Length: 96
Image (cartoon, rainbow, N blue to C red; front, side):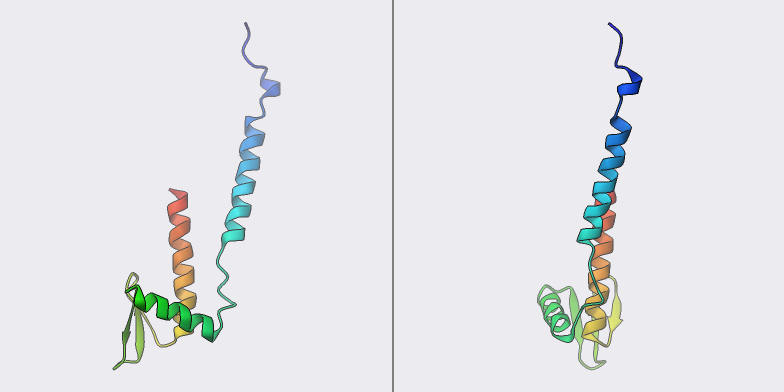
């Protein structure tokens, strides 16, 4: 019995379709950082402080993002950074 007809092989089409769907999923799950208002930022930073991800340094009036070692003087800057940092780490984990 002969093998499958190479003209009927649609595996390449399926792979392209699957890649397109994964790209759409990634786009839909991407984190928007431009829409972080002060209240949202403060809430996120408070949660990060409770989770020991952020350390406030009152005498220097900065917030230290412990996983990256980066300091911020604004809760909004920290919130935007953390969202982007988390999204980047998640993308790295998915890519492995």
